[in-house]
Image (cartoon, rainbow, N blue to C red; front, side, top):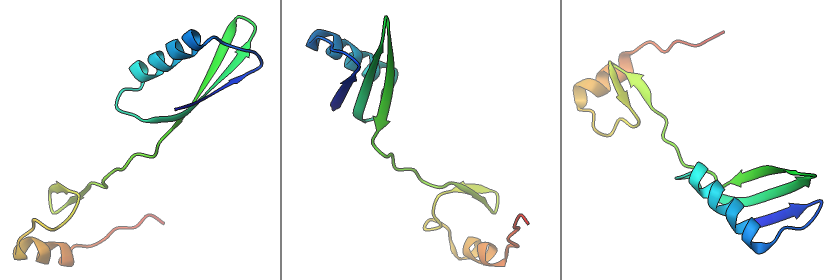
Amino acid sequence: MKVNVLNGQLSQDEINAYISRAENIHRGKIINEMTLRLDGDYVDIEYHFAPTNFERIRRITGYLVGTLDRFNNAKHAEVNDRVKHTVS
């Protein structure tokens, strides 16, 4: 993880404490970069996270699905016959 310190200096122990805090607060996310902006007695922290993958879930024929690969022929026919609503 890249750490940028702006408007002053921090010891490596302080930087490590901010890294540890960030990892505890944002468990499960990958932090690529962190900017620590010093402002008197305050430190503003800015995180830059790695992109996360997600799967689109849709409600189709009464089921929440991401893909149609597990549907049988009848469900595929329902999907093909359904009316798609659009917002205008």
